[in-house]
Image (cartoon, rainbow, N blue to C red; front, side, top):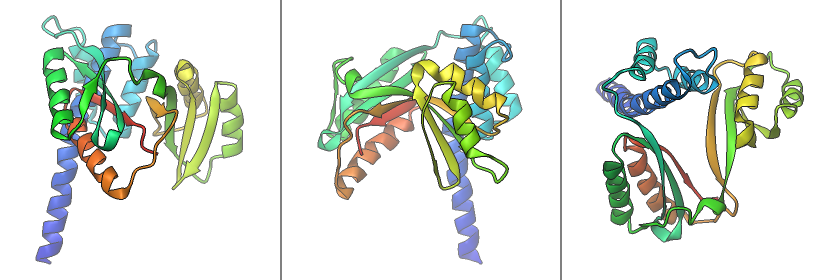
Length: 236
């Protein structure tokens, strides 16, 4: 009984720790979208998607509303999107996307993480052509869904590929079709979806299990940083 309690407590603490890092990232994305296109999600598709992603992660409604209001605050520092590229352990290529109000802090934290892992940052733009930017939408599959019909409908909205794995569907298209794909998903009545822009490696590389452990340790360190919004690698 004591061990079971300790396990549940550790599991809950791990979940809280994850939320404490995830929610600020989601809030920052919402604030940026509201500042860019206005606070009304009905007329701001980017904000609508950011809110949907937050809801899919069980972010409380109050947190979402606060993030939207923060966009109009006079004392709100400008948040900018910046990317960093580097070589990690064993030559793994890593692309880091950040949203920050302090680029000096962000680049210092990212560079330190790379250096401690035995890697280094490279010149911006060096890895850009090695990753294809894609719109990726993920949603849970239900018995009521006609996946063939959904796939056909999404083809008209720019779908390139759709696969189902472990009860979840993954939709992929060109990043320029992000708006059309998310709108089509909404019109189909799909619930609890998550929509993101991801960087898919054009030439993924194989690494040993031991090497992947080292690479994942760096990825975990980067993702712990509040400024980091996404980390992408060429690991197959």
